[in-house]
Image 1 (cartoon, helix red, strand yellow):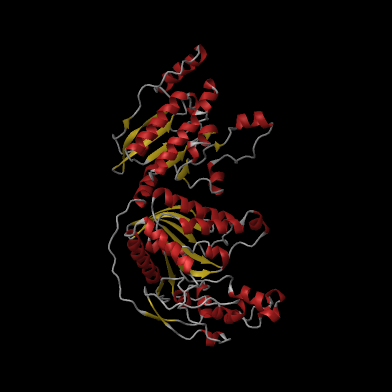
Image 2 (cartoon, rainbow, N blue to C red; image 1 turned 180 degrees about the vertical axis):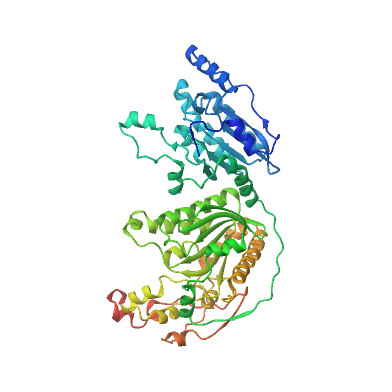
Length: 533
């Protein structure tokens, strides 16, 4: 827990790096031509800390890996950043980029050095430019916010991490409490600028004590390092397509495995970044690094905040050049005034736009329920897999029935007519592979899904970016317009509309034609005036 005596820069580096491996990159600080009063302040800071500036940079080994580090010393004029500190920090970032090293930033600062004025304030721009170039080179930039971190440091290089973690109890905020009260005349509510509050609002990925930081960073660097393993490719097996409504009921059973079970049994080296309603994590599947974006069926319905986390995961994957694996399992999006006002529809739209244009490999897994826009938001991918009983629909079948028939009793019929089951999704070109389920052995089911994801990531890794992205765009451009699509049988009951059809794993399926709304429900125009045109 952060206290009155925070860990100093050199002690923290000793905790973080392998013993005896730190090597300084620091030359003497540039001359800022201080006035006598400021020169005295600098001399006293150097005497008390044994350092020549507020920033220490260098390299070392962490878990045997070479990394670059940059740490503030709060004891040196409050860790404030002026011209000399900014120049040292910028040079370190540029060197880390040139030598293609992961960079770990460890700020503890009150912000701009007030003794140097505006020229020091504007230094944050050049530090930010260097960090942006480092990230553009697809090199990891990890930030550990220490007690305290405020002002221009927090509002620039302290907030640009691919991952941002913080010291428990740390004071972290845009403006420190003293300055905030002096300018506004009031204090912020207690706890507003504490690390725990920022973590609760999704601005910090994790709370990590200084002594645990090395293990955390080692796990992150392991998770984004590819060490692919081979996996068996079993013969394809037929799956009988049962009634869609039976699948809907199967996905709602209490004991059905969810995303957390899948991750526990199918992934390794997992670093969780977010868990409220949507699981965001770094992990490896079969040795392939990925960003996992998974809907948690046991959590609250995904709302705008969860979708923003999904988009954040897509950006993280792009920056680190690792694949994205989305897991869909949701009864629908959050339905509330707050969700509407917070931009639910906009976040769904931006998720679609992000995923369809993402430059890294993408895989989407329909694990269970796939109702509405919240499910669609995570669907676009190079490859789409589905569990045998997974389904995808514009609305939960009861909702569709309420729109078409003004009751929920026709839900089984509409589940069939809308072709929401995995077999029909494969036949219509929405799903590439259906994985059989083993209800009696949930562990095997999750491991089988993991093997399928492993094989898919392995296949996508062998494609160049341009070919893969062009194929993804072409896939969705052609969806529903193939001249070879079969007409839907004219059945009106769900039992007639879903005759058992064998589906073979991993093989292309015959396509179906696009349907008008009246073909789904011939009586809809009589039941609802809005459908009469």
